[in-house]
Image 1 (cartoon, rainbow, N blue to C red):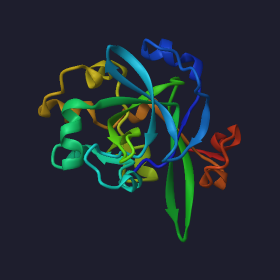
Image 2: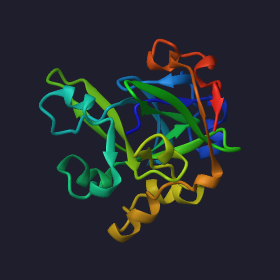
Image 3: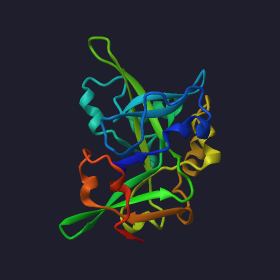
Image 4: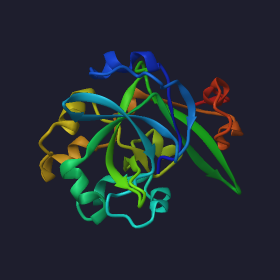
Length: 222
């Protein structure tokens, strides 16, 4: 799964993703946790940055607490799960990121690692999004990060990784027309391990309260 990520270089979002509106009101985060509001890129009247809550609340949900269970969506079963099938057709998005965290089990302890794309301050996770309306009429826009099998690097610490889109696949993922089912495995394949790097980080990342640069600094490089 992907349960934490970072998003830095906020001022470069507009240029990197060619969005029609700037990232006003957002700031860099080193330790993003579920249930927080983050910038997400969607295609509508042009490509735009929209604030959304991490943890998908489908439009049909009776209880918004379902969002706590839908922070991730498995690439292999997107077209099988009712919560995701229609969203693959109609509500795909890009989730800008600078890196993500995974934890490796070592005995009774989980050791955190920070993983990023080498020489890429910003990249995009493939995501799904939806809008839920509460009984009082309040609308909540939310998203889920798609995960896939790990590449050789990430497999050293975890059996899943977020689906990082190749730059040339980003526009295809958010295009107005949905990808063909046969195209999805290639779009959501593990990112090339040779273009990524990973290092161990402090246990301080375990608490989302610690949203400071030191949580991504290396303790031990792999």
